[in-house]
Structure formats: structure tokens, C-alpha cells
Length: 487
Image (tube, rainbow, N blue to C red; front, side):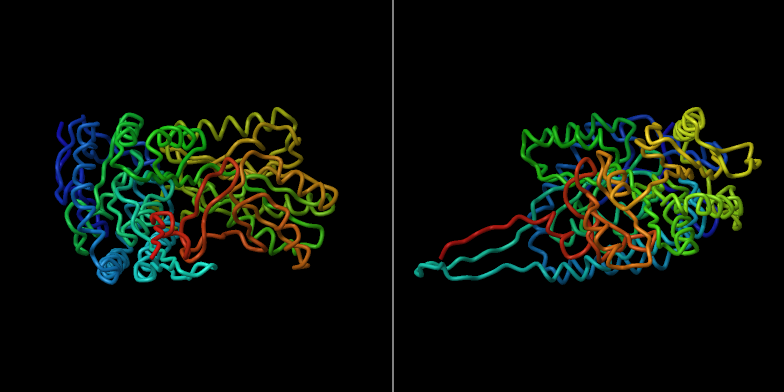
């Protein structure tokens, strides 16, 4: 069947496009439609157009055709379009949140927080669009003026995940368009509708034809590889798993396309001996249960000083037992479903493996909804240091606790991972915490706080967690080439 042009969903969700967005118009895809599942029920509630390689090539043609003219648009005008899009999203805040809840399963409070966070990237980069600066210097030996200028890299491919369907789109589209680049956005097939509604807001805000395209596809690998094989594409930005990031980086190598990779995480949440336990548990609840643990910045391993580990685990389990688990549409829900059945089974297998290795489950058994993809929040105490769950990115509401004897051991355990996205440290002595943060081999650290994300801050990791930074003053640099002119 053909995907309908516009989907009408219950209020407050506004009418949402379901086609491909190419060259400034909405159109059908060449592939069969993609069903969109509500993870709270397991039911398909919508169908969207499915892009093939041919559709992707047309989207790149449109981006290339629009590139030169868009790059010539003054930064102030580009910024005003992004500002208008920011205001459009804020006006539709409730609708976006409800749509995110419907297709991703995110509870209302988390979904509203994502809308606010995601919109901020448009406001931030609207302001950065007029701050693309060059430089002037005289060569030390004299007789030569050194001029530097920054110019857009060119057409970009922006690949986003399902767990933050709006914020990951705005975090990439905002700087790309602010820098003067055209962009093709490829959202995850599990959560396409939020990206399509975002594109509609951008269109109403005045984005010229061809400057932004949106492709939803069930042939992700084929579409991405075809676009990367075209030397007219000059950059790819990806948020997702480390294995896929490695593959995309390799595919970008022949044409030397710029790459930004925000990849997997295995964040350690460290509770030092002098930590305030009330504050640490509150921070742990945020760091673990935000979006039900389905976040690359979620706390993945809880490393707690042996003197505090028992009490911390008991308090955390008590707090998790009090959390309401249910469908996203229920206003009382605090933790929603896992995004799909495959992810749910993976999380359950990790918990089962930890229990088999000798860990103890502290949370009380609870009934879960019969429909949908739900996992009960779980605290695992006394987890062996070699348990497989400690090496995996859990992506669910599960908190494994490991004990340590001193700061040196805690730092060694925290750094014992191929990933390096984020870490958290809780303690009463700020100098001690800062020293610990300096020793963490991560791109980001939260001290006595469970969330580090902010549109004005540089987001990204090191080691196998990626390349480049998104957000903050440096975020736009990922989309700019530096040119040197000798005069």
C-alpha cells in the first residue's frame, strides 16, 4: 500500500507528513511502506514512505543544486530561519512530546524535556550563524598577510538514532544549516514521524527548497553506502552504535569526507567514600532512568566505595521500586517501554547473565503491562567484575553495582572499557572530584549531577565513543572548512 501524504493522530499531535521530503516537496518513496510501532502496545499505528537508493540520489541532487545559493545566504538570514523553527517547535511542544511518546514510548515528562532540549539547538545555532569568524595576521618575517576564512563543507548526510528522535535531528541540522551546508537527514526507521514533523516545521520556517531533505528507509546500509560513494557528499554525521560508526567511517575514507561520530557509551557512575548518599541516589535515578536508560549517556556501571555500597544499593532499589512503569500515554508513567522486542530481549538476557554469574537482584518483582515491550527497573548488587553486563551498553533500566576499595581502584575500573563518552563522580570534596574527573578517559564528566547534556556545551566522546563534538561554540566547526589566503 502507499503511505498517506499526511497522518492525522489524536490531539495534541498536529497533522504529520508521512512522505519523503526531497527538493522542498513531499513525495512517495520507491520502496514498500514502513510500519511504525507503538512500543507501549506492540501495535503498528502508521505507515511512512520508504526511500530506495534512487530516492537518496535524488535527495543528494537536490542538496547539491541548493548548496551554492544557500552558502551565499547571509548568516543573519540563516539564523532567523533557525530561530523561526525554534519558535515553531516550542509552539507545538505538547504535540511533539505526544508524538515522541507514541512512536518511541517515552513518558510525557521525558518527552517534554527532549523537546525543550532539542529546540535549544536551533536557538543556539541561530545565534552561532553570525559568529563564523576568520582571522588576520602578519607573517613573522613580514611581507605576507595571513588571512583565514571559514566556509561550509558542502552537502551533508545526518544519520540519527531512535532514542532522541527530535534532539538528535536538531543537534545536527542546526549547525549544518547555520554553517551554510545543505543536509540530508536520515532518521531511524523506528521513529520516523518526529523527524518528518520537524521537517514540516523547518519548511514553514522558510528553509529553501533542497536545503533540507529527509529520507526514511528500511534499506539503511544500502542508502548510506550509496550516498557516501558519491564524492559530491562532503560530510557524514552519525549517532548510533560503535560498529556502525566504524563502518561509516571506512566508507567515508575513499572520498575523504568529513566525519562526526557520536557512538556507544559505557558510562561509569562513581560514588566516592565521602559522597552524600541522598544526592548520589538522586543523581543515579536521573543518570539511569532518563528515557528508561535508553541513552548513550546513561550510567551503565555503578562503582561504589565498599563502605557505602550496601546502603547505596538498598536506597537505589527502594527508589526504583517506587517508580511507575507503564505506557507512555499514561500521565503517571515514569518509565516507559523499551523501543522494540529485540531490544527488550537483549536487556533481559543481560540481566539473566548477571544473575547467573552471582549478582543479586534487589528490586521487588512487579507486574508489567501484558502488551508492549516493558522491562522492570532493576538494581543488581555484588556484580562480579568480569560479568558480561559490565562490558555491554545496557540501554535499559538496569543498574549493576560494583564495589571498590579506594579511588585508584575506582579509576582503573571506570577506565576499563573501550568506550569513553561520559562518566559521573559523586563526592563531597570538590578537589577530589575534579582530580578524579581529570583521570577519567571520557569526553564528558558530570560532578555531583546525573545529566551533562546542554546545547551550549560540547557533546562527544573519545576512544571507541566517537570523533568530533556537537553543540557549544565548537559544534558549528564540524561543518566548516578553514581556508588560508596569503596576501
